[in-house]
Length: 194
Image (tube, rainbow, N blue to C red; front, side, top):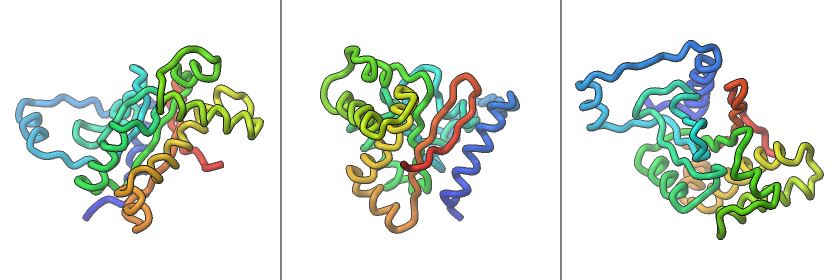
């Protein structure tokens, strides 16, 4: 029986609690384990995370190899590669959960908020849109609010730009949530839409 979105989210958050409590299930992979993993892939969730070297979903959620289908891109935006990953996760693996994981201290978001150089094109535009949304709503502190808004916007972008995801959500097969990883504490919390 396939896992529900609630079960998948609970599994991730339980893993994060182990991570925060320094009770990770440290795993050693024997050659036979690697052979088995090489022949089958059954992720229970897809995660869109930042490329930041300190934000590794398998570690923060204390999950084993093969359990998460992950795309990492600066500022966890809906890049073409991310959208393709989501199409595969939903279409091939039928994941019941997609998590867009922002994080405190995001350099890519800070570059936009501070008016520094960043990537051109769509990636920069997506973060700039989140920054503009925060300024219009007069949310404070601006940098932290932009990090959260960017994750919330990525959820909307993925739903509007990934037809298989949109259909899976509409049919109740998949749920999409935005989350924030607090680097100093290690905690992940789910963000509520504004």
